Length: 288
Ligand SMILES: [Zn+2]
Image 1: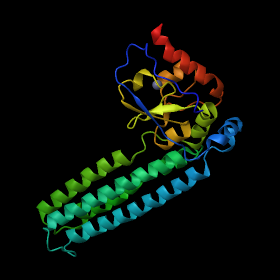
Image 2: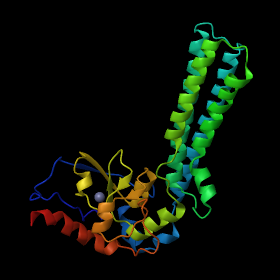
Image 3: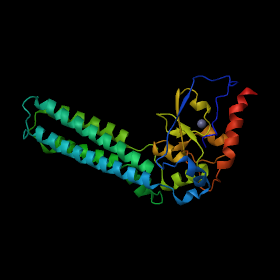
């Protein structure tokens, strides 16, 4: 694999930004010596490696810890609201806002760990309801982290100071909506989808940018041309870092069938052998 490096084509005229390509090692930690063997081995047999699973487990535990702490902050916010807790060095309003903001941060950080874990070790999409609930556990926790507080402030406590009530409910409502938007998994990946991507692409290098949600097969894809830093790795690593969809342009150029959500369709034949030649053709094309 190391000998096959797609070089920058000097004749390519429309190179907007000079790219640096950073290699990202997969969690599988394959040594160069065992790489050729791994390439010919049946990839479908190990859709998720043990390393991925254990790393995903750690992230899920961290998510749960953050979420428990978030609920603790919600309880503390209620206690401040009713005057049961008073940290003398801050005003009651400041304490209330501080606990709600902390609640928000903990919910959102937990959700990021949760999503990362689901991209590394995805669940099956055979049961759509379970698939949605599991992937969006962060959204559910976010509701639990703010809705009880809102209900208490708006409907249960009748004697609270109106100004405090107003500020508390606005802060909690904004945190709730923002938290739902951030915790929602906009690019979920299923066990089947990840396995199909690995079967189809094998050890072929794919490329992605830090903040995008797609991966590319062609390092000179037009959609990568504005990025100065591009990462390279196998498709399992790309999906593990949240790049769950194959670029539509790359899919077309490599004749890979994809669904509307960018997932490689099941039944798509492996392209490992052909892909390197196609990469060369594509990178040379603009020179003609
Ligand atoms: Zn592309």
